[in-house]
Length: 291
Ligand SMILES: C[S@@+](CC[C@H](N)C(=O)[O-])C[C@H]1O[C@@H](n2cnc3c(N)ncnc32)[C@H](O)[C@@H]1O
Picture 1 (tube, rainbow, N blue to C red):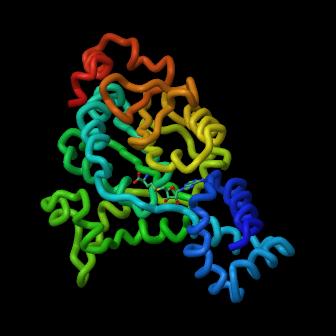
Picture 2 (cartoon, rainbow, N blue to C red):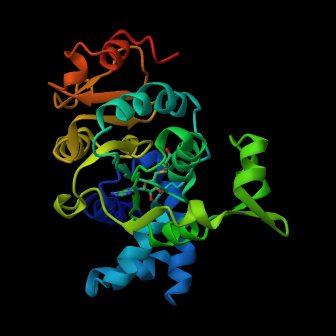
Picture 3 (cartoon, protein in one colour):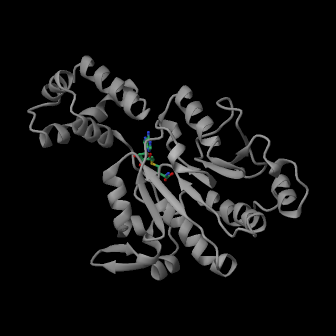
């Protein structure tokens, strides 16, 4: 591929999704955009590039951006964040949302659904504690194709086994041939919606917990800061933010601070969880609930 094509797609991707395409990833353009060129009836990527510059077709641009996203995910990915959800965040919410019995969660880059479904399965397991609660989960992504897969909730044997304890597989999925579909009660309890993290978040509302895992790594520092700063306006003052293992707020934004001894967990600067003296807060601040 000619360097000019690379630059054109690099700029397009950055502008439309924030994703940064480094030159060592130029091979991805060939493998991922060739099927798009074919689908749109172009003989080559180069021919598609020329057409794109003449008349930028929105639907084609959407296809290009989707093709360039990395959707790698798994159930209970990295394990620890979900342990922290169970042992730190949910006990805190139980105490601090006891009056309204409402807890809202946003999975901001949900991919094919394993992350929001993992959260839902944890809440289902703890049903005896959250009986009568409204625990909405909004799951968003920039890829409509991946959102359709998430809504369908059908996984290969490999995907279903990856990270998922066998008893959870047996109690929450139905086998369809060689695949597994997550049961309807779980599927219907997650709301899926297209959302680009570069877009205005005002219509989304405010959340108690935000998962924004393994997506910021694809953005430059300026974009990460912009997203995190705007996200802080959509997190309750005593809410929690989960980032991926290779992501941090340090050196990027001062709107969030790491929660002590809870790797990957952040709370808003000024959050009462860093100050207040009730038992759940103390346990969080000392990290004693996070083992
Ligand atoms: C590697 S997956 C992470 C999935 C899940 N959060 C996890 O940790 O397993 C990254 C997801 O971010 C989505 N994504 C990339 N750029 C985005 C953007 N600008 N807005 C929203 N989602 C985006 C991709 O489509 C992809 O599904």
